[in-house]
Image (cartoon, rainbow, N blue to C red; front, side, top):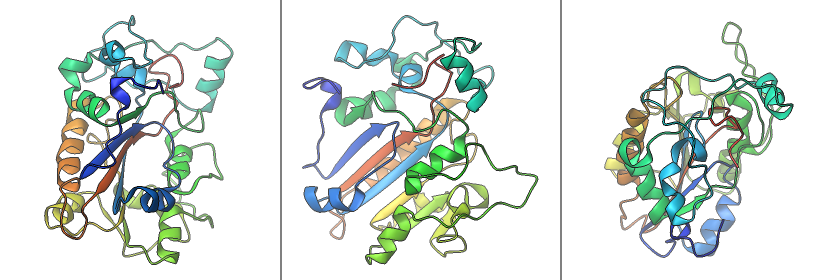
Length: 274
């Protein structure tokens, strides 16, 4: 990050703070203890990067491209983004296009978050490949696969540690608001079948009732996950509604930290997110 840039102002002393990044959330419990934050919410979306979304923030010092063609919303199609596509990008053989949204027109709420929270535009997901490996990095810091498990076969179960499991070991309340089929946390032997894996629609209900646990992960199904070729404003609106409810201070949770992240090196930019 560039010190002093307006887009990098962290407001950890305020009732809530936002961090927008493209990298795994790390040090959650240590960070909570150090900052006085009493609740952490990690909201995960799909397949877009800082260059693709935040062109309009360059005047504020954000390190993004500014001269690529403006793309329509919704996108016409998805770009190839498995590990083979990433190799082709690395070796100069890719066919992905460089395109960007008009930030102010299409994504004003994400611009607002970036300008009033902390933007980690130089961070990116761990693997240049499909969604699942990078979701697993967000949940537990490692992955046993570099592809999406085939939907035509029974879902695998992997014996790996996770941040929610660590929270449970230390007596911290947690809940994962998942996409269909408990995606992606249902892959964890440690978490599979837990009563703390609930559908994503319940997040709004719990937040409105002041019933969110200390650690929350939130995923959505399409179109609210913004996965191309979904209308990205649908996901932005879902994020705004969920985030507004989650960030409201209560006597039990006076300070929340909300991390909004994407899961991908993605050639929508013709390059991985920086």
